[in-house]
Image (cartoon, rainbow, N blue to C red):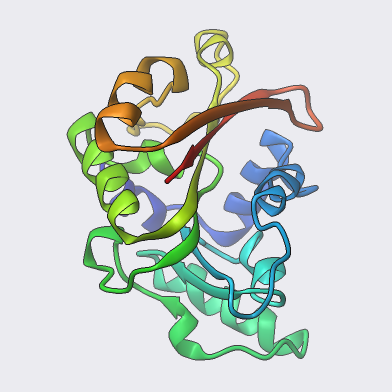
Length: 207
């Protein structure tokens, strides 16, 4: 099953429970993303690919020039409603129902692929194209951050499992030659452990 079809079958409550099961409901990944914002302002352009219901976006939209994209309109409606209920100012154009490859904007200072969004691309060729496009639309000295389970935890079966869905696995160390081929100037990895003991790798790619 393709990711776009999969998420049509996953309710908002189920999605939130999956984040909790992954140990990401406490926003430990957001703290890593924020490290690469340096001194964020409303002129700092941030793109979140796969923003879903705004788990991370609700925080970033308050302190940056944020754009969130997702192909599930139900999730985006929830995101917008939560912002409105919280009295958070936003431009409806900041939350878009499009795929990453449809995005026309550029010059982002930070592009994030949170949780396991990079695994939703259908194959490694699409992942490569996504990273190449990310490089092209980054501002000078911008950064791309990609979050995914470690290979160790995937082998141990610690990921979320959905019948009929097979993610395209993404392991930092195996992608190193491709990162360099695309042209990233500095490549780092930060491994962290979530609140439920799951180990994740954050790939940090600097232009």
